[in-house]
Image (cartoon, rainbow, N blue to C red):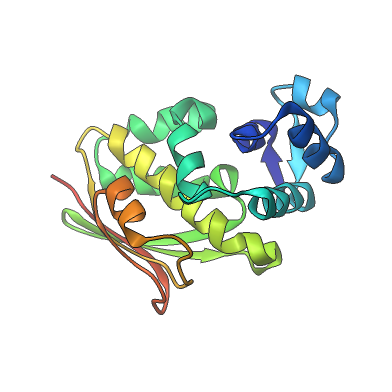
Length: 194
Protein backbone atom coordinates (compact mmCIF):
# COMPACT_ATOMS: atom_id res chain seq x y z
CA UNK A 1 0.00 0.00 0.00
CA UNK A 2 1.54 3.28 -1.13
CA UNK A 3 0.48 6.89 -0.57
CA UNK A 4 1.50 9.98 -2.55
CA UNK A 5 4.06 12.07 -0.64
CA UNK A 6 1.90 15.19 -1.05
CA UNK A 7 -0.67 13.68 1.35
CA UNK A 8 1.58 14.41 4.31
CA UNK A 9 2.44 18.02 3.41
CA UNK A 10 -0.79 19.09 5.10
CA UNK A 11 0.38 17.57 8.38
CA UNK A 12 2.89 20.41 8.75
CA UNK A 13 -0.02 22.74 9.55
CA UNK A 14 0.42 24.31 12.99
CA UNK A 15 3.87 22.79 13.57
CA UNK A 16 7.30 24.34 13.68
CA UNK A 17 9.76 23.25 11.01
CA UNK A 18 11.73 21.39 13.69
CA UNK A 19 8.67 19.51 14.99
CA UNK A 20 7.64 18.55 11.47
CA UNK A 21 11.16 17.31 10.58
CA UNK A 22 11.28 15.24 13.78
CA UNK A 23 7.93 13.63 12.94
CA UNK A 24 9.15 12.82 9.43
CA UNK A 25 12.34 11.31 10.78
CA UNK A 26 10.41 9.10 13.23
CA UNK A 27 8.27 7.90 10.33
CA UNK A 28 11.34 7.17 8.19
CA UNK A 29 10.62 9.87 5.62
CA UNK A 30 13.65 11.73 4.29
CA UNK A 31 14.20 15.19 2.86
CA UNK A 32 14.95 13.52 -0.49
CA UNK A 33 11.45 11.99 -0.43
CA UNK A 34 9.90 15.42 0.21
CA UNK A 35 11.74 16.99 -2.72
CA UNK A 36 10.32 14.48 -5.19
CA UNK A 37 6.65 15.33 -5.92
CA UNK A 38 6.14 11.85 -7.42
CA UNK A 39 7.55 10.03 -4.40
CA UNK A 40 5.41 7.52 -2.53
CA UNK A 41 5.50 6.52 1.11
CA UNK A 42 4.52 3.15 2.50
CA UNK A 43 1.37 2.43 4.44
CA UNK A 44 3.48 1.99 7.57
CA UNK A 45 5.09 5.40 7.09
CA UNK A 46 1.71 7.01 6.48
CA UNK A 47 0.27 5.28 9.54
CA UNK A 48 3.19 6.43 11.68
CA UNK A 49 3.08 10.06 10.54
CA UNK A 50 -0.72 10.09 11.04
CA UNK A 51 -0.40 8.69 14.56
CA UNK A 52 2.35 11.18 15.45
CA UNK A 53 0.24 14.04 14.10
CA UNK A 54 -2.75 12.97 16.19
CA UNK A 55 -0.66 12.65 19.34
CA UNK A 56 0.94 16.07 18.84
CA UNK A 57 -2.26 17.88 17.88
CA UNK A 58 -3.45 20.30 20.56
CA UNK A 59 -6.24 22.13 18.74
CA UNK A 60 -9.88 22.42 19.74
CA UNK A 61 -11.05 21.87 16.14
CA UNK A 62 -10.86 18.40 14.52
CA UNK A 63 -7.52 17.80 12.77
CA UNK A 64 -9.35 15.86 10.05
CA UNK A 65 -11.33 19.00 9.17
CA UNK A 66 -8.20 21.18 9.28
CA UNK A 67 -6.66 18.87 6.70
CA UNK A 68 -9.92 18.69 4.76
CA UNK A 69 -9.81 22.44 4.34
CA UNK A 70 -6.29 22.15 2.92
CA UNK A 71 -7.07 19.40 0.42
CA UNK A 72 -8.08 20.43 -3.04
CA UNK A 73 -8.63 18.77 -6.37
CA UNK A 74 -5.00 19.25 -7.41
CA UNK A 75 -3.95 17.09 -4.44
CA UNK A 76 -5.42 14.17 -6.38
CA UNK A 77 -4.07 15.13 -9.80
CA UNK A 78 -5.63 13.64 -12.90
CA UNK A 79 -7.96 11.41 -10.86
CA UNK A 80 -9.43 14.49 -9.17
CA UNK A 81 -9.99 16.10 -12.55
CA UNK A 82 -11.65 12.93 -13.88
CA UNK A 83 -14.05 12.86 -10.93
CA UNK A 84 -15.04 16.52 -11.12
CA UNK A 85 -15.49 16.23 -14.90
CA UNK A 86 -18.16 13.58 -14.40
CA UNK A 87 -21.64 14.32 -15.74
CA UNK A 88 -23.43 13.22 -12.60
CA UNK A 89 -23.01 11.63 -9.20
CA UNK A 90 -23.30 8.06 -10.53
CA UNK A 91 -20.46 8.62 -13.00
CA UNK A 92 -18.32 10.36 -10.37
CA UNK A 93 -18.78 7.52 -7.88
CA UNK A 94 -18.03 4.95 -10.57
CA UNK A 95 -14.72 6.69 -11.42
CA UNK A 96 -13.85 7.11 -7.74
CA UNK A 97 -14.76 3.47 -7.05
CA UNK A 98 -12.50 2.19 -9.78
CA UNK A 99 -9.55 4.13 -8.46
CA UNK A 100 -10.32 4.57 -4.75
CA UNK A 101 -7.16 2.68 -3.88
CA UNK A 102 -5.31 5.67 -5.38
CA UNK A 103 -7.37 8.30 -3.53
CA UNK A 104 -7.09 6.74 -0.10
CA UNK A 105 -5.79 3.18 0.15
CA UNK A 106 -6.67 3.07 3.86
CA UNK A 107 -10.42 3.26 3.09
CA UNK A 108 -12.64 1.00 1.00
CA UNK A 109 -16.02 2.21 -0.15
CA UNK A 110 -19.05 0.86 -1.94
CA UNK A 111 -22.00 2.80 -3.25
CA UNK A 112 -25.55 2.46 -4.47
CA UNK A 113 -27.24 5.07 -6.63
CA UNK A 114 -31.03 5.27 -6.79
CA UNK A 115 -32.05 8.09 -9.11
CA UNK A 116 -30.71 11.28 -7.56
CA UNK A 117 -29.85 9.69 -4.21
CA UNK A 118 -26.64 7.84 -3.42
CA UNK A 119 -25.61 5.87 -0.38
CA UNK A 120 -21.88 5.41 0.16
CA UNK A 121 -20.74 2.82 2.70
CA UNK A 122 -17.18 3.15 3.98
CA UNK A 123 -14.84 0.73 5.75
CA UNK A 124 -11.38 1.49 7.05
CA UNK A 125 -8.36 -0.74 6.92
CA UNK A 126 -8.01 -2.10 10.47
CA UNK A 127 -4.21 -2.04 10.12
CA UNK A 128 -4.30 1.72 10.64
CA UNK A 129 -5.21 1.33 14.31
CA UNK A 130 -5.70 4.58 16.22
CA UNK A 131 -5.45 6.69 13.07
CA UNK A 132 -8.19 4.75 11.22
CA UNK A 133 -11.07 6.93 12.48
CA UNK A 134 -9.15 10.11 11.72
CA UNK A 135 -8.40 8.83 8.19
CA UNK A 136 -12.09 8.01 7.75
CA UNK A 137 -12.96 11.63 8.53
CA UNK A 138 -10.27 12.89 6.14
CA UNK A 139 -11.63 10.61 3.40
CA UNK A 140 -15.14 12.03 3.88
CA UNK A 141 -13.61 15.53 3.57
CA UNK A 142 -12.06 14.45 0.25
CA UNK A 143 -15.43 13.12 -0.95
CA UNK A 144 -17.06 16.44 0.02
CA UNK A 145 -14.39 18.34 -1.92
CA UNK A 146 -15.11 16.25 -5.00
CA UNK A 147 -18.87 16.71 -4.67
CA UNK A 148 -18.45 20.46 -4.34
CA UNK A 149 -16.88 20.45 -7.80
CA UNK A 150 -19.15 18.02 -9.72
CA UNK A 151 -21.42 19.51 -12.38
CA UNK A 152 -24.76 18.32 -10.93
CA UNK A 153 -23.79 19.60 -7.45
CA UNK A 154 -24.59 16.59 -5.24
CA UNK A 155 -25.28 17.58 -1.64
CA UNK A 156 -24.34 15.51 1.37
CA UNK A 157 -27.48 15.20 3.47
CA UNK A 158 -26.21 12.92 6.24
CA UNK A 159 -22.93 11.42 7.43
CA UNK A 160 -22.70 8.56 9.90
CA UNK A 161 -19.45 7.59 11.62
CA UNK A 162 -19.12 4.38 13.61
CA UNK A 163 -16.58 5.89 16.00
CA UNK A 164 -17.04 8.28 18.92
CA UNK A 165 -16.46 11.95 18.32
CA UNK A 166 -13.81 13.78 20.28
CA UNK A 167 -14.85 17.28 19.25
CA UNK A 168 -18.21 19.09 19.32
CA UNK A 169 -20.49 17.86 16.53
CA UNK A 170 -21.22 21.44 15.51
CA UNK A 171 -17.74 21.64 13.92
CA UNK A 172 -18.61 18.73 11.66
CA UNK A 173 -22.09 19.99 10.84
CA UNK A 174 -20.74 23.41 9.91
CA UNK A 175 -17.95 21.95 7.78
CA UNK A 176 -20.08 19.44 5.88
CA UNK A 177 -23.30 21.44 5.84
CA UNK A 178 -25.12 18.25 6.78
CA UNK A 179 -26.36 16.21 9.69
CA UNK A 180 -23.38 14.30 11.19
CA UNK A 181 -23.87 11.42 13.61
CA UNK A 182 -21.34 9.42 15.62
CA UNK A 183 -21.47 5.98 17.32
CA UNK A 184 -23.47 4.56 14.42
CA UNK A 185 -23.45 0.95 13.27
CA UNK A 186 -21.44 1.79 10.13
CA UNK A 187 -19.73 4.61 8.26
CA UNK A 188 -22.05 6.04 5.63
CA UNK A 189 -22.67 9.11 3.51
CA UNK A 190 -26.10 9.90 2.06
CA UNK A 191 -25.93 12.20 -0.95
CA UNK A 192 -28.67 13.93 -2.95
CA UNK A 193 -28.10 15.33 -6.44
CA UNK A 194 -29.80 18.62 -7.24
